Image (cartoon, rainbow, N blue to C red; front, side, top):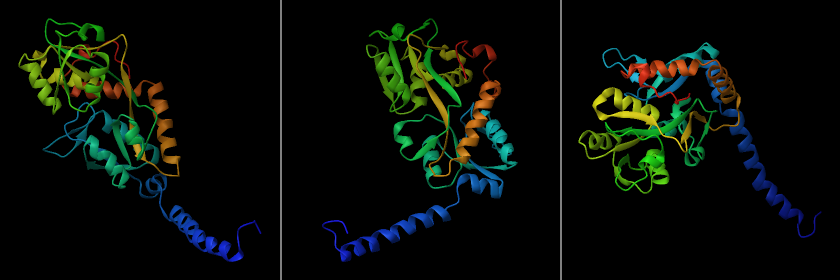
Length: 280
């Protein structure tokens, strides 16, 4: 017997610890993992975001979904010979939907540290660079070109676009708007020279309103973040391992780029609108 511990004390500790251990084991054994549930039901639940091309589009008349992420989800489902079930969501809510077991996968998420506290991320599906939607007549190529007090920059509050602008163009005159649409309206009204946007957002905005100007990925430095698939954080890692293998194969063969380009075309953009240095 270890010094300082009586038999009665050890028994008390055992009485407290043993039920907790048993409960933990029971929960681990009783909870069905994503891999097990998908394999059993042949259904993959997808967080779907209406109006978020090139990733998602819902036809109001027919209820049918399309877009780059729908093509990807359909192909992932083939691995399990499963069908898709769509759960309408938003970028923010899709994280909560994963936590509450409403969906199995959520696309187009940047793996921020805060999000990683509650969900797990796959390997990058694409690397998403940032750039400038610039008014006509202004053609910035680097962050240095806009990092000047006379350049009026707009962003949406709390976004990664705002983070990038304040870090790489702190000398510019930055105005933050509540929403991305408000920032675009400032551009449209001639109250801004540049709207900092992730590439796919910039291309989509320009496709809707070519009069806004031009879009280009900025360099020196190239600012890019991974876009991943979110999945539930769980002990059984087989589901995320399969999806990571799917990502590696389809990125390597260029299939993901093809799906992304097709999604971009659905916005009305032309292939020549896609910057040459935009990589997927």
